[in-house]
Image (cartoon, rainbow, N blue to C red; front, side, top):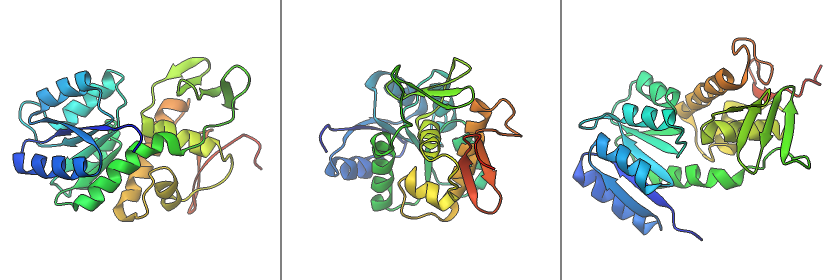
Amino acid sequence: MDTQKTILIVEDEKNIVDILRFNLQRSGYATVEAYDGADGLAKARNANPDLILLDVMLPNMNGFEVCKTLRDEGNNVPVIILTAREEEEDKVRGLEIGADDYITKPFSMRELVARVGANIRRTTSLSPAPENASGASSLSGELSINAESHMVFRAGRPIDLTQREYDLLTFLAANPNRVYSRVDLMEQVWNYGYVGDDVRTVDVTVRRLREKIEENPASPVYIRTRRGMGYYFSSGAEA
């Protein structure tokens, strides 16, 4: 690891924090810890972590509130939600408020460290759409991207995307009209070699992305669905 990355652990159970700290530091990461939501939010603002492991059930302020507050402030640090619950709505809610990933307790440390690494690596593992001389590339129609600033624009206005949404958009846009299944996208964008229920993550992220870049998310012109096959970025040139 060329530059040591910092992980903020927000978890109220000290034994879990100790285990996470030990395994993350052994894997080469620096760690910062917080034991309640309010302190976690403060440290997320002040410590500038590279990723946050965020428990849902926290004193003072729950994990959903912490994540939503950060996103509302324009902070797009990768967030992995930690939850002891199996309910689908908890996972979906976390993704809808801007979390990048979730992992359900109990989890193996090998899986958690792998997901931390995948979420951090993704910022450099994807190739952006080709740029023109001005540094901004036209994706299709009114949509454009500046790969240097990682900003996306529609009709000249900036769109506030999470890092995961940006990664998904740039990956699909770099391969226009090519259809990718949910499994493909989990492997290529999420960097996971396993799937299962995690494919639900793709659907939620696509929906959130459409709400931000499409004039009418119910009838998308950019991120389109090929029924029974997957998603693709439309260049407007396909039949």
